[in-house]
Length: 496
Image 1 (cartoon, rainbow, N blue to C red):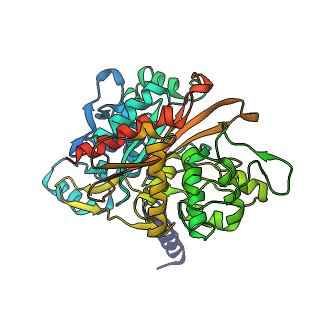
Image 2: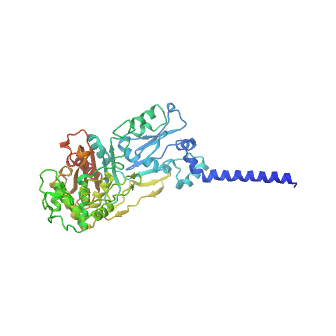
Image 3: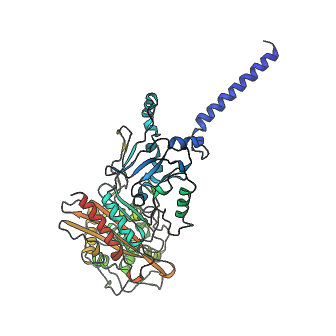
């Protein structure tokens, strides 16, 4: 071969090599980036070319798919539909042709569309046989009756959230948030219809922020419900040994290293009160002093064991609740009664109640029971998993007896189910907010129910934001406890 031809051959070889390198770079290195590019409509077209699989509650789908109408002007064949969409939105999230997907619709998108790697063999078989690709199903742990009770109760109050858990497994039974939204309203791709519905829900256009999942993402001051954590810390670290011994608490109680007196709500008898009595009438002075006696390090340790200061994934992400890591002694006292920088999600406070109910063992919360392939094979099953042990069985049972006193004789009587064989324990909270407590407080109630066989099928946390209520009418026992009672009763009745 003469020299010019050899040069041309080498040059052509280099071009072929460059082409092969580029082709492999695009197919393997850039594949995920190109697949997820918002300008790549092929992926979206494929996603909506067939009906999505369903999200299931107690064997019944709460989602569906419908043919896209001609008015929607798009090349997506199917769009998502929802049954009781506003009630279930905190569980499902949304899947929209125009605005993407969130929560279970996003996290389990691979299963719902049939594109999950674990369905590769199924997809290959369908391709060979010419069968259209199908999506799998997501089975949740939710209890339909409990969800309905939670959502209906919140609707009567305006804003708020409910989280309910099975203490023995960690399975989430209810997750409600109001105000809410119906994902069906913007599931399509119509600029006129779906875009308008979407814009009305955005916080800049709707201050009530209906798309905020208050059960998982909103961080509230917990008020006196946090006293359950402080009581657990005091028992676990030997500051008190029983529910009925005097706590050596002065009245008035001056915050350490200061001249500021910690106040109690109303003229309640808190001087040297027992731990049981202090929880029954919700003594700030007793629990503030207990927090200081336990010390900030041990208070922080106990709070973390309950799940504070860490995001939870259920599998939807829940914001991290907060117990301050840097505090002086007065701040430790305030933090220990749910003030200062202590803040929490409703899910977190349901976890607190569930750990107490489950004799001190905190189970990891989850709301997906199993993932199912289109051919009904189970791809993945969730097994209950212990997350931590915030308190011993003995101390948990002491705390149970105290919380049951709160419901029988204290501030939480409206949370009692009042049925033979059912015992309810709880704690109310009225959380201050605004500069100098200038805004209406949040009403809290956390609780659990036990049946006569000793099992504990449900623990609940309820928070109510009622900005229109008369300030004097706002209390955890008055606004939140009846909702918790109805949710617990719904769970128990569904097991009969």
